[in-house]
Image (cartoon, rainbow, N blue to C red; front, side, top):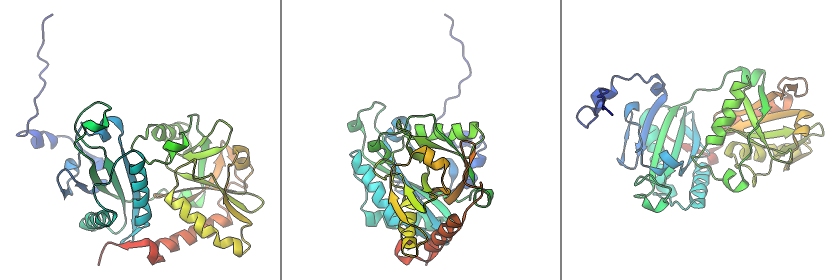
Amino acid sequence: MVERDVGLKEISKENFFETLKKFERPWGANYLAMYSSLWDGYTKDPDLMMIPADDHLAHRGDGVFDTMRCVNGCIYQLQRHLRRLERSANSIGIKLPLSTEELTGLVVEVTKKTGEKDCIIRVTVSRGPGGFSTNPYECFGPQLYINVIKYNPPPSYFYTKGVSLITSKYPQKDPLFANIKSCNYLLNVLMKKEALDNSADYSIGVDRDGYITEGSTENIIVFTKENELFFPPFDTVLTGTTAYRIKELAENLVSQSVLKEVSERKIHKDVVYEAKEVFLTGTSINIVPVSTYDGRKISDGMPGELFQRLRIMLENDMVNNKDLLTPVFD
């Protein structure tokens, strides 16, 4: 066989940045800053926001992460997010490279460097670089990556008209893995893809017995015609930080006789079809009403009174609850 020279260019340290400049990366406009423990420093240049190919995070999804919001210059529920990050890391045998106090200071400092008061912060802990096998002990050691990203709010119709929801065809995660916020999100990606491919906003998981679980990155809440507010049990799905806070806020409505009950319970998808209101929650969306599920209208297909009440309660909490706010700017 005659070998042919296909003109493959060799990239070296000397020509790397020159080559990098030739490729346009419009999505990089959303990337504000990144910290890497490999550098022990930060960058505001999106072209430098990289991790090694041999980090187990890249080739095995071997790492954990958590995502939080900075709202009006304060990070909302930072400590709760970091506690969940630590639980996820411990679950797969990774020790956080910093104490919670040190990590808090670092997250605040990196966010402050961007000058942005409204943004998304993603904190990732990887198994680390050191090989391409599945052996976790080949890695050099856990690494920390912090990315600060522009907050682009969802379309306004999410809140004025509601979102469409379909049942996912994909099998759901075992509860053990559902409660680990790992970087292996292939199932989550496929769920989001199937929603968009079917002209829906979101898809929701259903277990073998027909009980709903969770969305690609969202928790679901069901408000029944009996004025009961139900959450799928948090021991079977990821304990969403936003969902859990809404549960705490909603419990105050029981004493006001707005709600009869707030509880975690298995919810069959048939109950969702007949619900009074249905909501999705998450860090980037807060709380949004569901207008249709599998093509069926939820009630009259428009956002209801409880949605409006819970939305106001959550938004007030995000800017006024000093116990859950970590200031970034002096």
